[in-house]
Amino acid sequence: MLLLGYLFNVIFQHGKLFAVTTPSGQATTERQVESDKTVPELQDDFRVSTQNFSDVLQVQWKLFRIYSAANVAMIGFLGWCSFMIFRIKNEMPNSTEPK
View: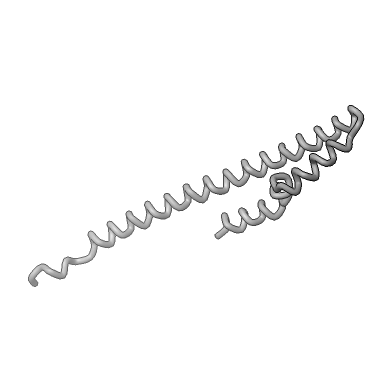
């Protein structure tokens, strides 16, 4: 439950992940680049695009760590459950044996 809350927190804090990857965001960027005429304006656009891409990669890495931790937790929990079921089965008396 805690990992799910952290996942939503990361997604909502970094809403620009979705703004950068949407087609409307790409169209806006293309119009802005086409309207620029000088080299400094193009350099500023390139700098902003590079920063946005860097932010997306950082969010992607955070999400990857969340999913990895959730997978490890699930595998551990399933292993623990299997172990406990095996122990309980061995401790229960067999009801088919004659008394």
